Image 1 (tube, rainbow, N blue to C red):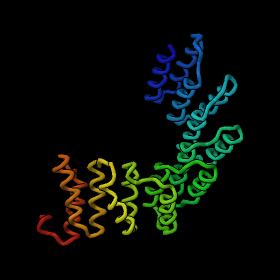
Image 2: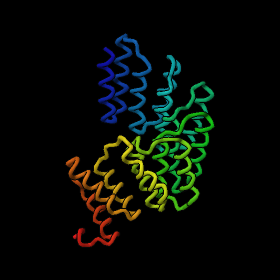
Image 3: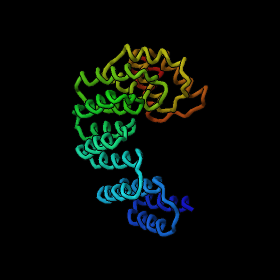
Image 4: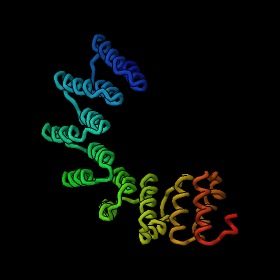
Length: 271
């Protein structure tokens, strides 16, 4: 059964054992069982996870000669280039995808955006160029794209990057409460760059959202309220977390609450 072989390949992937993955693939070929693209992609993922791009490229060429590949094949290979910080190779592959009739999707572009940020050392030019290409191609920016850029702003001292990232969020129409990682990233960015009006807007929508915050997110909400000098709102989040939901605050959230009390000159409650 092919699923047994797939399990063995995934086990090799967990150990990053490329040789073992290819050995399983060889046995699968000899068994006479039809090998679909998913099995090849599984072996390809092992190569990429182990950083063996030479064998990854050779495998894709073998796949082309023996049958069709799919967008997952190419995105997995793209992930390998990005993990190696080979942006030139990743862009060549992206161009090849389009020439071969494979339309890059959100996974393709987000992978390249993230790699551009990681390799940019604070220079966002390549990331913005990728996002421009993404939008021109009709691929919607999603919460992953926004989260990547928001997290990256911690490395930027360029106010234009901040403005552009926030405009991207507005243009996307994405509800920040739809994803906790996104919410935390946007709150941290707004706190860091003193975007008080946006903080006010986000916090005012809290009770209309369906979010059930994690402890970490409560910390971000408390910190944002403290930035706006809204101590009663800090207490509201605190009581909701501790009393209504019986959650245990960690050291980070406790620190956020203590900082809110001190910042808002409420030393007695802090002690």
